Length: 299
Length: 260
Image 1 (cartoon, rainbow over the protein chains, first blue to last red):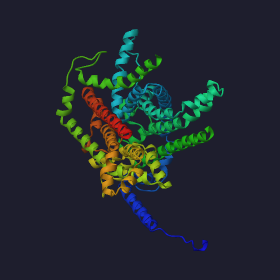
Image 2 (image 1 turned 180 degrees about the vertical axis):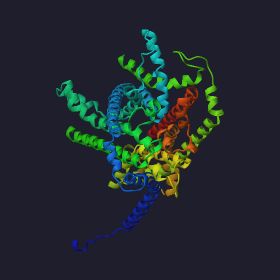
Image 3 (image 1 turned 90 degrees about the vertical axis):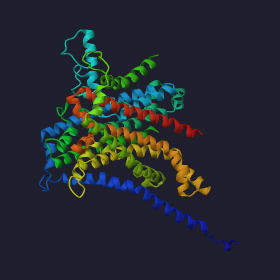
Image 4 (image 1 turned 180 degrees about the horizontal axis):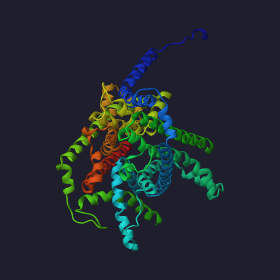
């Protein structure tokens, strides 16, 4: 009889709902240490910094700190240098790392794992350690400079200059190339060889295989890796400071010097930091937008 | 063939720069192409000169505290966020990864410096501030590794299986979850420890004279005394190297566990 059909509410259902809410509450409870810690020691200080950057050192509201960033030549030069430096270092790291990863995935598993473990090492190394290592290796009287001079019988005025932009980029490459290697190795491993084979079987030429199969698969990962590189380089200053002190003008060094050195002016440092965050966030957004667009077109 | 030449070149690219401070630290002096003599004097200087020794102790305290705090903060957070299936969970997981990119150590340092400069929380320049800063820097690394551990063991299915066999929350934690993610937690701990031991950027901003860590000491020594600097540098390389060896050991153990 169809009219006697009634919905029987299972007693278990209510129990399920109850258990789910308890679980949810427990999860929030477990998140609490994280939320409190990040809230108090990361979000609050950042918001505080953003607000204080709008006041001068006597507590009067002003946008002068931001006006300074775009009118004073030392800040404008710093921003320009930082953009150029971060782009150059990211490109060197990005291309170098992609190359290393491409080689790594062609090695037998044992050697690939060895190479990738080795390239994970710089991640934890102090910027000062790397600066010191390169001073010994390539400083004015560094070992490599001595060897080259000895071989070609050159005067001591000839040396690779570690203390100019190309040298600084080269030292940072020691961090950036391994970092990119690790992200690209994962991307290359996801590249399905049968896809390439299928394209070849369908008569694609080598450049067509690259253009329509390989690059669309690699590019999103490459761009993701590049954003990590660029963001990291915008904020980097430890190694430069160890190599050349304040002789080079970078946005990160300006922030550092306004926050903790002789030119102490925290609201100004805050304004510079906000500008730095804005630049980084814009670059990240652009790169992730590009990656998403490409991902959509690639499939 | 070319592949292997390139391979050797790539290995040397990492190994040679790392060997420089090590060789330097064992040699009496190194002015020419080859270093001369063998000595442990520069290592002795770390232990015998009070300023160096104190810096070493401060670094060890800071690194251990950052590891402990991160275990307390990141492990429960990774567990909870791994269970959150909703859009919120996804957003929080991504946010925790992007946060350190947008807010580099430099910016976090500037912000911390300003926020805790006066009472009630006058932490700037104290050991506490250094510990807090290192915990923040280490968090994404710990979080990512532990989250990956929860994901690879398929925590939900395991927990449900254990629960259906009658295990209560405590038993599930004790006999199922913790043993399974322990290699992940230990790997994260080693990574955070190594990063903290070498951290210079934030430390130099928030640490006063009372909280001189080993890298801060190294920064002064690079200008004053390259010999002692070489020993400190070499020591920091050993720390990174050892933690990576332990991590890859844990990694192979994890893989083996998964295979079983």
